[in-house]
Length: 209
Image (cartoon, rainbow, N blue to C red):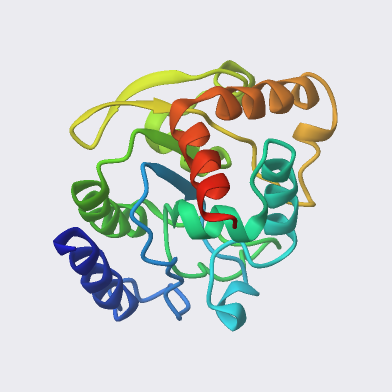
């Protein structure tokens, strides 16, 4: 009960954040789900603000289609896993087109919110989605060196299992051609076999989601 209250208070405080002057509010927050699975996106796009939830537009549709192939649909995942991001506000558009990549100070500012979430949740399985999220854990690495397998890394205080996924953006072709196509399948299989994922599926069966 205390853990749930802590998480709800954290999200309420996060929702009011105005630290980064270039970021475009609202702050996009997830449901206050106590979960051992922690997904890290990159940053909200221009559409998420209207919906008030992460992965609410086309990239989200693709992501949840992936998850449905291994036993969890969108509503089930949103109800049982914690969805965060490297940055929680829309960064705005880049001068050359596309969304602006958050700068190092913005990433650092938002990492304090993530640290608090790890203190409350202490998740076992981390799912970084996209290059920016993956780089926070692995540094700058080729996607094909980390996607498709489970890695163990120390992150926010202890070693955790990491299963990276490519970003499901419609603009990305990485997961639509080899080796990305096969590595995505391998990564989803790694998720499906992980005990934390299996526990979510058991919860679904017990609660008849």
